[in-house]
Amino acid sequence: MKVLVLTGPESSGKSWLAGEIQARFGGVVVGEYVRHFIDEQRRDTCYADIAEIARGQLAWEDAARAAEPSLLILDTHLLSNMLWSHCLFGDCPDWLETELRARHYDQHLLLDPAGVPWFGDGQRCQPQLVERQAFHRACRDWLLRNGQPFSELSGNWSERRQAALAQVAALLGSADQHAGPGH
Picture 1 (tube, rainbow, N blue to C red):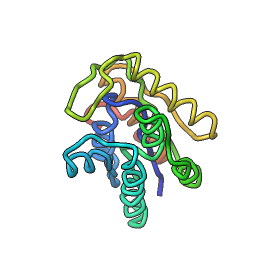
Picture 2 (picture 1 turned 180 degrees about the vertical axis):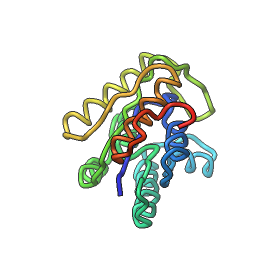
Picture 3 (picture 1 turned 60 degrees about the vertical axis):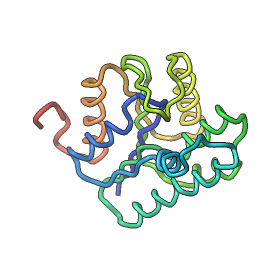
Picture 4 (picture 1 turned 135 degrees about the horizontal axis):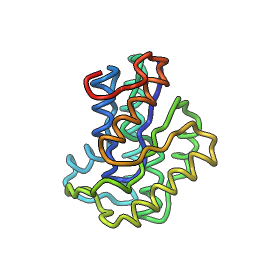
């Protein structure tokens, strides 16, 4: 099983690319638990919710891992939970980073916020590019500091899709390295 994580700031294409990758290569996509949590609770999150949201994300990830798909595509993981907790509340439960470091991920695709428009959806809160760029840097810094394998994706939607599909083809050892439209 190969485990791929899409990470980076909001509105950079993570969920969309997860679907594109699954459509091309199959596998199982694990979505963002926090979106489910907010829809269910019908309120903004508070610091007291962080641990519950993280446990929910881990439960979804663990259930998918237990099925042992050939490709597991994570629309997010605890890194986003940690960074959002620090961003919104100035703190984060210590166990999140410990748990994140203990898990194996084969590849992270880090999405740059520049080059694509921000779309508000009622849950997003960083319409300014400078805010999303700071989040992107925090993701990159954590991945580098912790020796995690990652590639950065940028450009317009088409360029991101092409780069993501090529990265996954390489990860899977697929002959389909071109990954252009219709392939």
